[in-house]
Image (cartoon, rainbow, N blue to C red):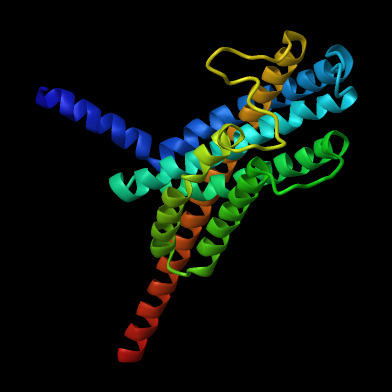
Length: 262
């Protein structure tokens, strides 16, 4: 590798890690992400309620799937994003990694709660109860508690750098819940149905239901990324304001000390 290649790679890394450049790029992309998300979600809801057929066993209740399944996917994706960001913060000291992890936590918690709520509504007519201590449901509930733990830990520690490190460690340790959630229906005898979309042998769901589900998943994914970008922008602005406030307080103290000494 030549010195010019190293310089080019460092320059690219610096550009990607620059909060100012992120603010510029996210400001440009956010309206497009939000608009595309709204359009796709509305289209998915139209397909779900006016085009997709009833299930021969579940009837109209199967249409809860078009919100429940994307919410469950994004609940896990959100925590995976936190784990990746936590790794980047602890290992590479990436200046935006902690911002990304902090912004993703409340969004992931919201999607996890949505997955649990819609799953309960779906479970009542299918299982006769809103909740069972099923392996999949219990592991998703643990995921929600992990999100709450990350949010609470960051709020409880006043030192921002220490809070970021502690949350990064918890984020990496907690990522072990993701394979448990994914494979719980295969490892244990559960009421929850096995995977029907992401399978080695291909989806088993009917194409008339699969297509609206995929459109919904893409729409909610774009919504997640738009909310995440907005959350990161808010956090960057908050940290800039905090730095300016601290600097102003220090200048005021210095001026007062100089006046008193004079």
